[in-house]
Structures are given as structure tokens and as C-alpha cells.
Image (cartoon, rainbow, N blue to C red; front, side):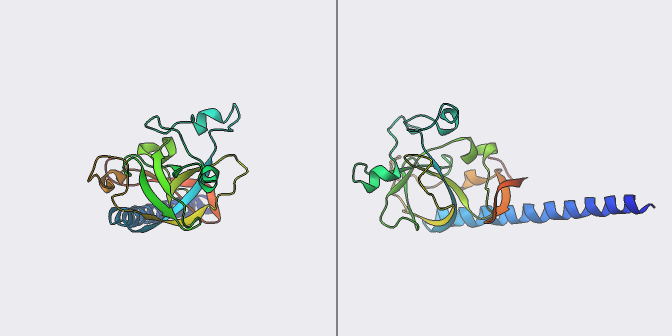
Length: 199
């Protein structure tokens, strides 16, 4: 066997081994997040910002309109901090979080965040985790100039949402989601690994 062929086989084996390890890590990540969300606990989040009010023409499709998934007006972090909004709108997985689910985020103590919006990267087969172990959330902000710390911790305020009374977080729906495997120093361009189960 030639050295080039042997090297190719070894590389293929290493890639399969790495893919398996990434899949296992993705499963552990999903289980840990499900547990935290189900019990009203604390979980790791990967935060980004979105700015529907000041989006350029090219950003409009990604940023969406000025209303949340139920047609209610979005509220920015700046509006809440100025005392002109009751909460900060957050985009997340609408199959998991009841509409209006209140969360607290460590980076902003005292700020009321509510998951009222969603998007293709937060739900179903298109959902990705850009950092292992961190549930993706998008914070509504005034513009791209607002600094959003990428990695933080959030806490579910159990039972505090706008949905039907008694409705809780639907952890079973976290099955079958794509997980982009990366780390704190490699948040973009990570490899996508499919987790098990149906979404």
C-alpha cells in the first residue's frame, strides 16, 4: 500500500472518529440544555443581536419586520433601559419556549427578556448551535452598533410567559436539531452535526 493511500485511510478514519465525538458532544449539549430549560434552571446561551428597526435593505430579510411572531411590536434593549418598554424582545426556538417566556441573562441584571420571536436558525431542522453547550438566542437591539456579549448564562423564570396558563417549556421538541459544533473562540463556520430523534 502506498504512503499516500495509507495517509488517506488514516485521515478518513480520523474524520469519522472526530465526527462521532462531535455527535456525542452534541447529544450531551442537547440533554444538558433540555434539563435546564425543563426545570426552570440556568443554561448557557450564545447571544447575537438583531436590529429590525435600522436594518439596511440587504439585512431586512434576515432581521425581519418590526413585529414578533404573534404580530406584537418588538422592544429593543435600549428601549427597556430607557424605561419605554416593558421587556426586551428575544428570538429563540418557538417549539421549546412558550410565547413570551421570561428569561434573565447574567450580562444584564434586572433586565426583563422575553422569547417572543423566532427565525430559521432557531428552530426545526435549520436550528444550529454555534457554540457547544450554548442555546442560541437573538436579542432585539437598536442597531448593529449595540455590543452583545456572545457567550453568557440565562435563567428561565418558570411559568412566566404570555401563552396559555400552565403551558411550560416543551423540551421534547429539542430532538432532531442540527448542532453547529464550535467553541468560544470559533463561533462561526463550525461543522454541523445532526442530533438524534424527530423534531
